[in-house]
Image 1 (cartoon, rainbow, N blue to C red):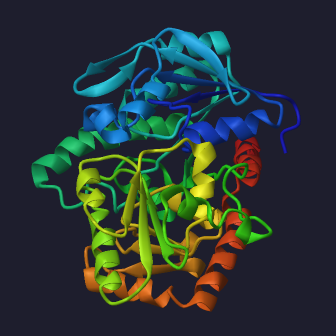
Image 2: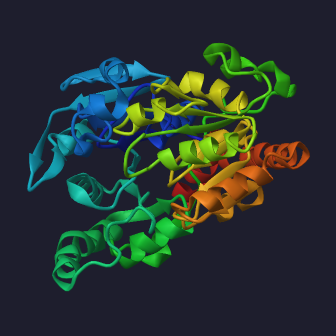
Image 3: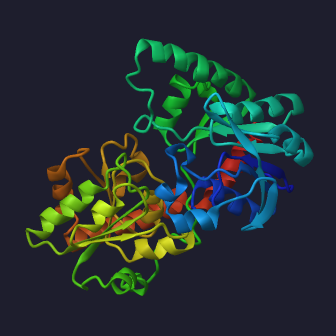
Length: 395
């Protein structure tokens, strides 16, 4: 294991103080080991490509997390440097990455993508200044737009993604992916050499996402907060309430089961175009995005977590002791299989059957206990950073 303090730069397109993505969790836990960490980012908000951030994240959340170009600050023990940006050929380009990396003179650069200007800029710096670049890919087959491309689009993708990817691969010491699925995409579509791909699950912030020794401590939190009847089981979903994610199918399943005398209540945490429709359902509560520091309580006071697509949130929920139900749209679930049921994507009947299975208290509680125990071993950030830094040390 690396013993001397390192200078590490993490280069990402966007950063939000109150989110729980790897952009936040990785630097926090590396800084706990005594290393000097600097995030280099733009002032753009997460999901900027989806349009107005207020529509995606909510107005209050967006305002609290808005950054300004040419500023810097300290957050959770690490430095954040916000640079200006522009769009070139429809893609975000952060201005001054090379100059700022030269000033920092890092031993290691982490970035979580292998496509786009950011990956090329980091690769160029690593090539000329002999810094270890650890790239990555978090796009899996289920969320990739590369499946089923027409011939013309395949040629376009080859020149715009795969050829630049060969260069990023050449300059990368390692390329870390959170699932085998993401590794396949990195290799097949983005040109990353198989020998450089390493599997390491996304890190969960264990300060916020854990199961209490006495599960009853937080059990009533949501029921008291939202005036939910004590005898109802809570199903939770967190993330974008968008047409793409389609959380309405969860509300429909709750409606159908409630009509058949199942005592259920849905809590949806997020913003998006389906938000107002969800609010019209009986037995459903919609909450705006909450800071990561508050989200753990939401999970610990729920009974079942359901996600319709890929999300870091279902790893967070598992660490809080929630059994999961995931759509089979999520292609790679090996790391959560022991405590997860899957339903046929967009099938209301299939989803209802899986929810009914988890209405059995003993079985649900056993799966939740397994989720918490395995979550600690597989996803906790303290273990993740040790493994990640050890990969940087390999010859």
